[in-house]
Length: 464
Ligand SMILES: [Zn+2]
Image 1 (cartoon, rainbow, N blue to C red):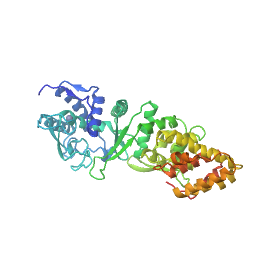
Image 2 (cartoon, rainbow, N blue to C red):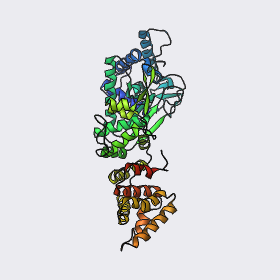
Image 3 (cartoon, rainbow, N blue to C red):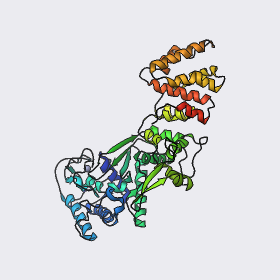
Image 4 (cartoon, rainbow, N blue to C red):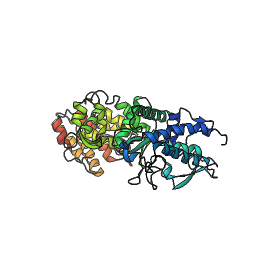
């Protein structure tokens, strides 16, 4: 065998190879190998685990039907391990000219097919990775990395989830967490591959960013969800911005470890709790979990509240989390729940990148309108409700003009200036609907509304 340093310390372009590379470094506790023999020791250890430790319980997610670990030959486990190592060494011995598809390295390449991926079923695995054709050339380092990919992923939604960040510390945190769990599972003699036990991809992501912000780790992250079976094998990709992480850090300092939040103590987490616990009709949510191979329905009330197992909150469907993770506006939830101006501005500034001046001017309009507030009910009926009811930008503008006229009959100063209207309240290119929602949130905060008034307020609003 030729003498060359096998260097795993450099980032590569393909996410699947990259997650494997990071997994390999964590598994072997080194990123450079002085010989193929030295590397082969780690591969042997890994294949030994794949052959002897895969269990049926993770089922289709991590199949034991791949070329490398398959059990259909009737051979005993030792023979299967031997066969897998021979296949690997066969690849190592190849030497094709060209460029590695993943890192660009020149020559001494091996020919890799989609079926190389350990624990993969089928030949047509469409989502192996988006730019892979059926056969491609790869260097020995990248090819070897691929085998370590599954140990750096987590089961979620019946598939495999993983993430890659522009912040190396975050990647390290992810790999370490997986490595610890993987090793613990081997000791406990259970499924060695990591199971997140969260079956909604957005919740899985939310849970991860909560953990990261608790560690003070921030960065842009791309989350991938793949499967290694032929059916339903599309890849889901969700990008999380550093701003989303910072927002959570600002508003959700406490994560559901020990207790459930109250609206007064922890406004954001209360919203998360509210939407995880109950559906639109006010009924407690349920979820399905497979226990000893049987699908069981688990109820939020028992699971989380009665058992005081608050961490389980994150396992339930939550429209707020889904919208937040998908980067959609969540202003609707703030409006509907009469959230504070403070929470709203943190959201608008951190996530929507809204200008501070614009927020200040909309707030000033809401403050000015207090001139008409003698009692909340009349104020609501005369001022707030007409704003709520506007259905178009024209109508909204017309409404503001009416308020302006009313205001001038009582005040020396205008409700807002022409400049404020054009540059901040309804600037071209910005959503009028957003302005309306922000103004309403500022107005609601001024009133002491009862729970039932809230219900009435929201009647007729479209639910999401
Ligand atoms: Zn390469």
